Length: 414
Ligand SMILES: [Zn+2]
Ligand SMILES: [Zn+2]
Image (tube, rainbow, N blue to C red):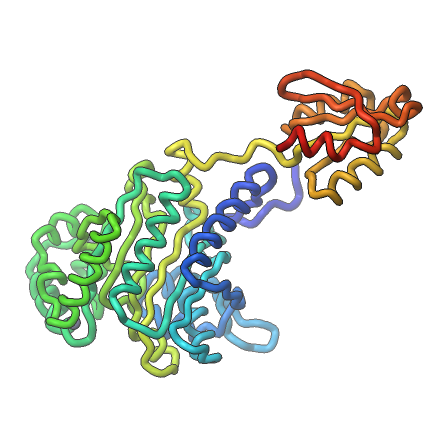
């Protein structure tokens, strides 16, 4: 029995699986940095008000927030999502807009752990603040899309909707409320849907699914500016060849979304857990956090879900090897110490065995490591100042002068 385990709903990611995480973050960073987004690091906990202000009335904030009082009596929360933190940082520091930021960071939700849902999960995302130009919506949506495509995912569907703005939303919500008031909803929602009837569109229970099939759609009730904005977003995506499906039920989990809203659904995953990410416009969020009116848009991709989708499609697998070269030394270890040092200093990845193990055992370690080359130093090589270089894939070997070994290894690896 192990005395201590990772807390419920969390997990350790160890090598070699963790190498896939590194590649995921590197690939994501490369993609978004090419589009002008810079890394932002923000605290993993915030004043609980930051999240209460933006998510009041949502399950994320009401039921799932990891909040507590710290030793100084401050009410803080481990962040349930990154957008509110980034916008809080924007309001605090007022960088010159447009402010384009990316992050790769853990989020915390105190919810029942299940497949693909963790109390600590990791998100890759971007936020762009300072303009409501529809071209920026297109850029952000296309980036999320192209990150998925870059991983090799082909069974991901882009769902798109518009949630309007303060001008057209009240009238639409009235219509929706009237419609829902006369409909047969699930137990929770027939007892009331309060301030936010949009939630009902998102309800997964059968009664609500059926009842909302013919519900009024927001896209049919947008005001003229929202309608024109949405038309430009769609035309832009069309022009870039990004295919999408209009999804009038798409409302997202937090209240602050306006206009463009989108989600990426993995067709390879179980439908209840198939959202690998999503995002949208939040033109009122900076104000909600005490800043000047500042439009913004962003997305977050769930790293765990993305990798589950990759597993399901058999793409973006765990990388094969950690090192290119394994040094085998049966003369006591001093030769291995020097050789691995020289190889690493020359930019070649190399590892070795320890504890003076047998030649056979060291070759086993070399095979297990996935290294392409083994460098062998036995008594004979030590006397002659040579190294035997063996190709672990092809099997051929040659003996070269110790002084020339780096050159030979570089040639073999290139
Ligand atoms: Zn319901
Ligand atoms: Zn509008």
